[in-house]
Amino acid sequence: MLFKNATLITMNPQRHIITHAALLTNGNRIADIGKTDEMTTRYPDEPVIDCNGNILMPGLIDTHVHTAQAMIRGCADDLSLIDWLFKRVWVMQGNYSTDDGRASAALCALEMIKSGTTGFIECMLAERYGFDGVAQIVEQSGLRAAIGKIVMDKPAYAQSELTMYPGMVESDGQACIENTLKMYDRWNGAAEGRIQVWFGARTPGGVTPSLFDEMAQLAKERNMGMTVHNSEVKQDLEYARSVGCRSALDFLLRHNYLGPRTVLAHCVWTDEEDWRVMQQTGTHVSHNPASNSKTAAGIAPIQGMLDAGVNVAMGCDGGPSNNTYDMIRDMRMVSYLASLKQNDPTVLPAETVLEMATLNGAKAMGIDHLCGSLEIGKRADFILINMDAPHLTPVWDPVSAIAYSAHGSDVDTVVIDGKIVMRNRKVLTLDEGAILEEARIRYRQVAARAGLEIKPRWPVL
Ligand SMILES: [Zn+2]
Image (cartoon, rainbow, N blue to C red):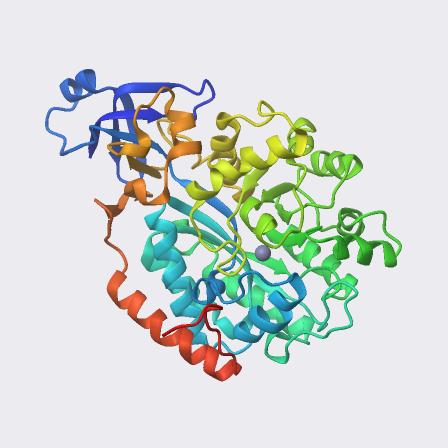
C-alpha cells in the first residue's frame, strides 16, 4: 500500500521531516520512503491512500496504562489521594469480574487507537481482571502491548496503616509469580509478536522485598520486562527510608529490579543520585504529567533525568487519575510542567516531547529496533493526523503543531504492523458501539456491587 502526499515526521536518526512524502508498506514492514512523485513513478501498480492534508508520523506509545481503570473514568474526581484510592478506585476495582476487566480493556483499547496510540504497557493487571480476556482484546484490537501481571502479597500501601480494599488483595506472592509465568508461556510473543508478558509488581510496601529479587531473577532468565510505580508520592520515599534505603529507587536497586528491561512509572520524588543510577542501569522512566498533576503528586524532574542520559517516555496512567488515555492531549503538559518547574520555557521543546511519545516509548518497551520511527525495514506502525482544522491552522512547524495544538481526535488513520486498524476515524478491529454500550451497563453494576453512589455535586433536576 502506498500512502502518498503526506507530511512525514520520520523520527529517523537525522529527524528528517519530508513534505509531499510517500511511504510504501509491504506486509508488516515499511518497504520504501520518498517524495510522492518519485514513489508513484517507482510503484505505479501499488494501491494508494491519498494522505493530502495529513501528517504521517510514528504511532504513539503509552508506557503506563491501567486498562481496568477506563471503565471507572471520573469516579474519583477532586478528591484527596487517600480518598481517591481507598474510598473509590480500589473499591470499584475490587468489585470487578473478569468480564468487567475485559470490557474495560476493550474501552481502553478503543480510546487508545482513536487517539493514535499503537503500543502500550499495562502496568498492573490483577488476577481478578482476567489476563486471558485482556490479552484477547489486545490481539483482536491490533495493538502492541506489554502486559504487566501483578505481583504482591501484602494489603498495604507504603507505610499506610489503612489496609487495602479486600477485593484488591492478592496475598499469595508465589501464586502471583506462578500465574505470571503461566501467562508468559501462553501469551508472550503471541499475536504475531505484538504481545509481551511482564512482571507488574505492586509498589514497595505491598510486596515482601524478597519477591522483588525473585521477580528480577526470573525476568533475567527470560529477558522479560518489569514495571512498577516508583516514587509517585512522598510516602513512597518515606517507606524506602523506613526500611533503610536512601530512596525508593535505591530500594529497587538493592532488590535487582532495575535494568534495561525495567520501566519505572512516575519517579516524582527522585534526585540527582537516583538519575545517575537510572542512567547507569539503563532503567527507563514513564513520565505521567496529567496524572501527577491531577493527584497533586508533584512535578517529576524529568529535565534532570534527560540531562543525565535517562530514557524518559510518556504515559497517561488511568481513567480516574487523568481522565483519558489520549497521549496527544497530554503531550503539551510534558513541556508546560517542565517550563513551570524551572521557570524557563526553553527547557523541554516540542521535539523532545515527540521523542518521548514515540521513540523513547519504543525503547522502554524494548521494541525500538521495530517501532518508534519511520525507516525502511521497520514495522509499519504509524498514524495519520488530519491537519484540516481551525486549531491546526496555520502550521509553521509540524512538530510543535502536534505537540501543542493537536487533539487525539485529530487522528484519522492508524496502521499497526502493516494492518489498517482505523481508517477515517472508524476502528476496523473492534465494535465501537458494542464496547461503549457494554461499558455503560457494566460501570453501574460495578458501582452497585461496590455500594458506591457517585453523583454530580450540583443539584440534578
Ligand atoms: Zn499508575
